[in-house]
Every structure is written in structure tokens, then in C-alpha cells.
Image (cartoon, rainbow over all chains, first blue to last red; front, side, top):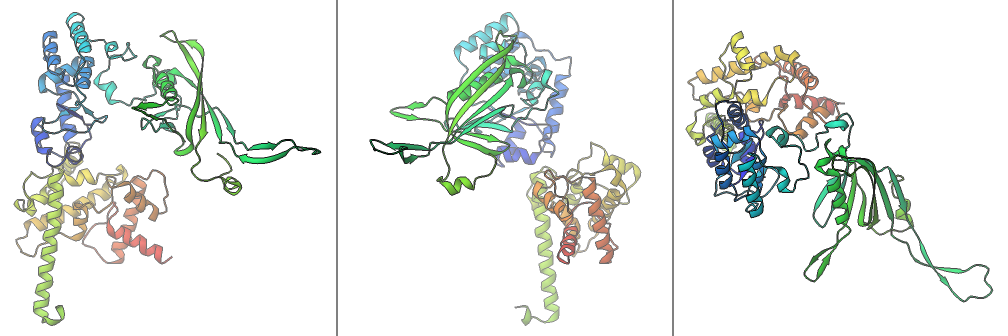
Length: 337
Length: 202
């Protein structure tokens, strides 16, 4: 079964656009919702009423029972394992997740960040570990899902808020989220870098060969061979807490891994597919090319996980020119950039 | 073809066409309101025009203070309130005047037993959402703001824009001697028309 995340401001029209006009009646009926324009508001009020109802308690046996039925979808299983008591109340009472509408079995939405379910069975190892922990400790530790964070248990409020809520010591800084983005063609995905490049090294070259064995010449004869590709290296200086105030979540490490992975190809049978990257700064393309070097310098104090907190990452990108280059086109390029 | 008809037949044909257009307009509004949940999920021909008006603006005329407070409260559910919320508290008297004007016309429409009864075009522009408000498309709001000379990167239908709309609407209604309706604080088609005329005249 799939679950669709809605917000308190979701209207019936928006929900119809998401699930389709053919399915809207089924979705409303399944979730026992009235046909009202403010469908999100009605659903959230119902969830809040259940969560605030002190008379409802969900025993550990009941949780184990419910979890057993949800193992068909790994992401739903993980979500349920990690939700707080109020989430369990909602699941036990109206058989759905807080903030999520149940979808009928006969419809399937493509995977996206607002859809849970349809990702395949939960792995047997994780299932067993979760059940054991629930039985013994009455809660499931997020570390069994390979989450880097073991200190925060997600709740409905955490999950509804932005991933990049700048809390913690960097809460007062204006971090330019979404302004600097590195795109990888291999995975068709991109990641944000939370700071502008501190240093930039831009190099264009011209290569000449030398005509040898010429006598009586006061300087060698040079023959134009080619103009070397433009190479640019960007130096980013960031702190691991800049992601959301909690370095244990590993946002910086994920970014570094993403960059490093772009130095390697993907083998598919006998073919080798390499990645091209595009660096966007403030919405425009800074450079498009191949990533030839990712070097990382760790520095600064040690964090709670025993690793350095401060990082300087240098990305070297060799440009793939979008149009043929010659004296005139280069002269006519923008003065800056 | 019209040239071949005598005067009486021609007027009847025009009247028939007007009734058909009115019916088409209300059908479109009903379909929109059904889709968005303001009306029950029946085929549009099963819903009367009076039910449509009631769902659009459930308000009696004249409006009492207690009814107005209920209308402005959070629990009130009507299509007009959702689509045309008050942009700024300072404009409440003008907003109330507008709501009152619409309620008056709708009441007259609902009470009428004539076959020729019709909802005024300017109210239909609210019903089919062609009047610009804070729930309109971003580009529409931007287009209206630019006509007022406000070129903003993040246009929003705020109190300032609403006040400008009211000024332009008042002067247009005065100029065209339309005394039977209130001026609007939203981007009604006549506001846009007047602004375009002003612009084209330099």
C-alpha cells in the first residue's frame, strides 16, 4: 500500500491533481474524508485530535503486530519504526501515518518524496533487528537503517519541517542553500553546496609544437597545435554543522562522497559510462565539464563522532565547451565568469 | 443570416444566444465548484443556480454585523472567501461594500422567477476566477502589478496593489456612470481594461 503526504493547506483540487480525477473518490472514501475544499485541514485536525487524545495508548504487542503487517514496503516500515508515540496512535486508530493519506491498492503513484510505499520488501535482517529491538527496548534505533544519526528520533514535526532548517549554532547565519549546486549527469541528480567558492583558479592554455633542427635561428619556430581545455578549480570551505546544525547527520560527508563518485565511471556490461558535471552558481551555469580532481582537507576541532568538523574541498573541472571557441568568441565572452 | 431576419425575430435570437451563454457560464462555474468540493459531486445539470450561488457566497442581504463577523471568521467555508480573501485589514470597509454588492445581486438573482434572470458579468468574473486576487496565478498578479508600474521579483497581491485596484475601479465606475455596483479591491477585468487604456493613451 502507498501513502501520499499532504499538507494542512492541501485543497481538494490539489489532491485531485495528485491522484487523478478517477481515483479521488476512492481516496476520500478510503480515508473517510468528506468532499470538502479544505481536505488537508480536515485530515490534519483529525490527526491532531488523535495525537492529543490521552485515552489512546498503543501497547508494544500491538506495535509489533502492526509492524509485521507493514513489512511489504521498506520505506513505510522504516518510517513506522522511527515514529513517536503520537504517530502510533494515528496508525492504530485510523490505519494511516500522520500527515499521509492511504492510497487504494489499485492505484500506484510513481516514487517521489511525497509518496511512501512501493519500494519493495523490507530486508529480512532489518525486519528481524527491528522486531527484536521493539520487543526488548520498546523502540527501534535508527542505526539499523544505516542512518548516520543515532541521537535524534524523528517525529511528525521534524519530518514536516524542511531538511535544511538552519538550526543549531548556524541558525543565525544566512546559508545560501540552493544557490550553489553540482549536477551529475550519471545519476541525473544534484546536490547543494552550502557556501560560495572561496577561491577560484581559472586556466586556459595554448599548445604549440616546436619545429626542430633548424639552424641559425635565434629563437625556435612554433607551430600552433591546439588550445588546451579550460580548467577551473573551485575551493569550498565549509563546516559539517552547516547542514542542519547536527554534524552527525553527515550532510557534508554525503556531499563529498557525491563529488568523489563523479570521478569514477559506471560499468554497464562492456560499456563504460562517465559522468559530466555542471556547477550552477546563482541559477546560472558556472562551468560544465568533467570532474578531474576532488581533494578534501579536513581541519578544525573534532566532532561528536570523533572526526574533523571543518573541511576544505577543491573541485577541479575541465570544461566541455558548449560552442566552438576561437579568438572572437573568447573575446566576446562575459567579462566576469 | 441575421440580415435575413426581421427585427422581432432577430431580438429573440439574440436573447436565446444570451441565455445559452449564461447557461454555459454557470455550467463551467458549477463544474469548477464541484471539482473543488464546494458543491456535492453531482453532474452540473443536477445542481440549481441557486445552490451554486449559495455555495459561492452563503450570505443574506443586507449583511448584519454578526453575519459579517461569522463570514470573516476562520470557520466560514465559501468559494468567495477562499479565493478572494481580504488582502489587508485596512481595506475591510471596501471589502465589506464589495461583498455586500455581490450578495445583493445574488439575492436578487435567486429571488427572481423570471426566465431571463442572469448573474451580472462582473460577478461571473469572480465565480470563474478571472478576477485577479491573492489566489491567482503568479504571472497574472505580476501582469497586473506591472500595469501599475510595480516591477517586483516576487509579486504578491498585497494591500498596496489592492488599494490601487480600488482607486482605478472607483474612477472607472464613475466615468462610466455605473452606480449600481460597488468598486472592487481586486483585479477585475474593468480594472485591467482601464489601465491598458490609460497606457495606450500615453
